[in-house]
Length: 65
Image (cartoon, rainbow, N blue to C red):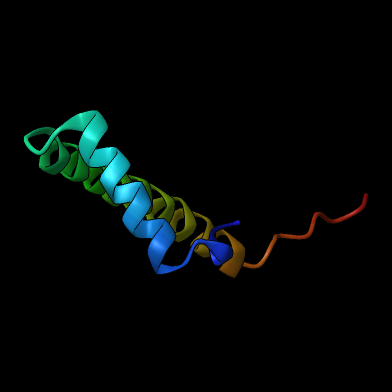
């Protein structure tokens, strides 16, 4: 979907965002999106690192009676 946007499409999106949010709100909006992405990446990295040691440990086999 985003592959077909191109430079003119990005410029149009930026102009529309500038009209809707105004020049004073765009930096705040950008910071909010950036901090949200940073927190999401941190959380996914923590989840992946928590799962890796569990996979690396061999499972104990139970002995049959």
